[in-house]
Length: 138
Image 1 (cartoon, one colour):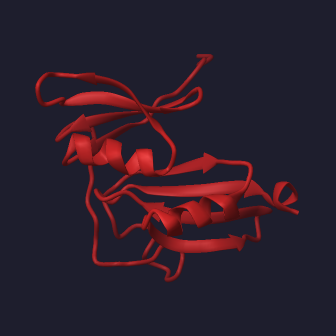
Image 2 (cartoon, one colour):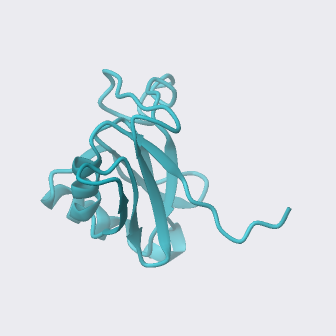
């Protein structure tokens, strides 16, 4: 197998709310399927796409933990999907997330594996690891 692309599918509890959350981060509505109330669609950021499926195709869930990477158990206490999103400037994304009141579960930090990383959480519990190589942020 030699894949040419991969598109994650997130199980969401509210399609329009999810699109609005991604728009706060600068993503755009890709397509919507099902009218008047869409049950499937996509959000796009340039050539990157994420599918959103209302009440299906995967798990979701937000636990009581408010952080990620702070305790030994908070990496697996939610049922949502974890994704790594690579960007040019983690700190610029952090500033945008603060401005847009996005749930930040791990502030930007240089990690031992050579990556500057922060984590944000989607309202349905999905965690996005916003990352850049440490060299990219020097």
